[in-house]
Length: 121
Length: 108
Image (cartoon, rainbow over all chains, first blue to last red; front, side, top):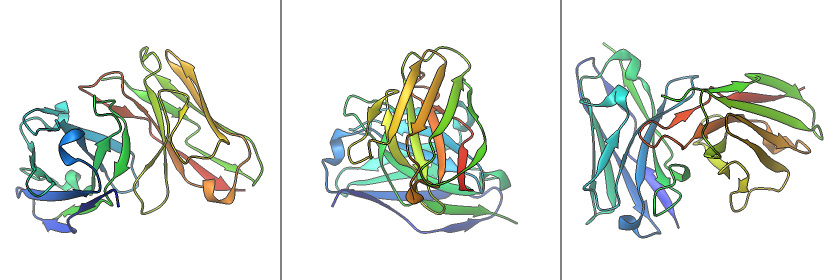
């Protein structure tokens, strides 16, 4: 079954870091770009960044540069997103999503189920 | 970054109605415009990409059109399962992918 399965909900304090994982199955992991997006409660979608199929290339949205790191482990078909120096406004559901095109189309045809990160003192 | 503005932000409609949602980009994005449907507590689902291409498995009652800065998503005959929030997304600027604010389609 083609799917992305994310790690469970997290509760963090301001200043903490969080790592979210996203395990892919059912398709060639090292063929597609993968993206991270987030959605604050009751709000719209925000793109955070992308990682290349081989994991050597990344591109981050301006709002997150210097505070985010995206990596992948091809031996376990797992994608990771680390977000540092958490603030209360980082409270959101975080999604991994597969790019629809192996050449990178920048739209998303397969999504993880989402991981809620709550940042609160 | 390219700003995407959707209208309306919400609408009420009945089953069988024709529904149109618009999305405007702050600058020309050619036809690099995609549409998603999101139901409460679920991840978004890709409906239409590149303005008018229907994603596999999406019913043909969903159509997209437009170019440049103005785009529309039309549902020709609203079905009960279509009540959801719809988002447009530009993929023209690949260093800053952005979404519209969403349109919530509710039951009248």
